[in-house]
Image 1 (cartoon, rainbow, N blue to C red):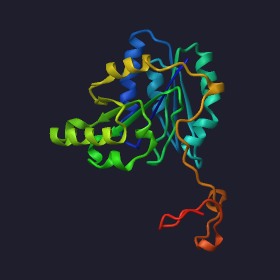
Image 2 (cartoon, one colour):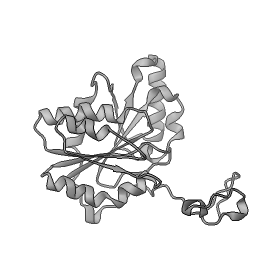
Image 3 (tube, rainbow, N blue to C red):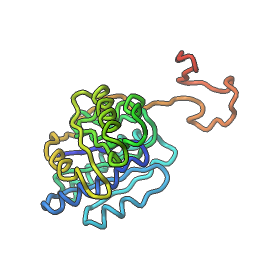
Image 4 (cartoon, rainbow, N blue to C red):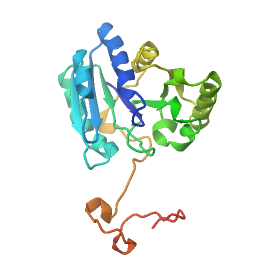
Length: 229
């Protein structure tokens, strides 16, 4: 089975781009299952189901969406196998700029919004720098010069990625992205590893401490000067 993991910041247009791409795959009669992971609420899984794609939905709630995704990946694979799918497309929640959801043998797709500013690619982490494919959305509302700068910033962070310019309204880029899905390697759940360590936070806040004075906090802590203890 092939596994495609789609990540990106909130509002970048991940679901809209995926809808058009999944429609292309459905028209080609490809057997695909989808999983939508969000934090507190979503109806996006209903949008995938409306075009005939078997879809599983999960809410991470007060858990890091990356951690939630990794812990539940086995059940997601089982869901796709039960549907006799040749590929599983997983859309993760956009939460922080430190997200790192990709595994070694998935196809990692980063969706990033061009209107967020030319320096955004320099501010985000592994979900861009370790992606196989970077999809730029909303490029039609900025100038050509701004698009070129944004593209160069992406290549500074990830010189080996494939860049696709997409439009979640018109479906531009969906055919090209669908062809990338075909190039995904074979995925083996038992032997799979992450490309980059996931975000971590091991401290008293994680287990419910509400007092704010630093004397109440223990665990892995990073000070404003960069020192970690």
